[in-house]
Image 1 (spheres, helix red, strand yellow):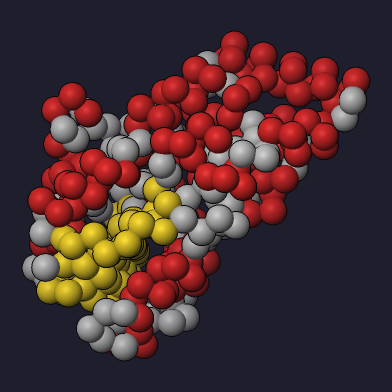
Image 2: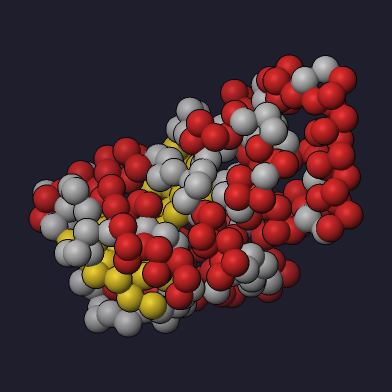
Length: 272
């Protein structure tokens, strides 16, 4: 369960903008594994509405989609192929036997864990050991997350909600710490990769008036961290800029830094 986002409320709008960005990175990682991709059994740990599983199901032998939120899983069941196995479960305690998966993907999930950086992320550590338990030797793990610089500079609108941004940055484990915990859990970190053109919300990201719409905001969990006052101040500023000069130029101006940092970091690892 997310530590700050009420997906029971946002699930119905989640797919309005979210896309399976970087799916080609995950597919590429699986092809380097010990079995051919069309024979691979893959776990989607924290599947949400199943966007990544929907694509993955066309390439691999079997997809297991796991999430804790019932509403997200209900949407996933409506669109996933019938041969995808869907189960409600926590990624901290997976209902599977040891070493049964050839690959695991974890997409924009870890920041929803209510963890404690001061204690060196004990819950994230627990998740990594659990993933290692169910992954075969030399199996492939891909983690889709965001680096601290990406959070600061990868979105044209994040500066409009600085308190929410600070909250979100504190929830994302730094990439170096993530890799260290993976190593301790029994993984070799093979690569860190930033697909510079990948966008969490796809082309909808370029909607300069997107933040004015609740369904658009539901595609990015940072808005759940904004107070009512901060949200209203951001909306007021966008509306004022739009009336005076139009939002297109403002969006382009504040999107420049994304070209240097990107939005997503994929950590590719293999089970020792």
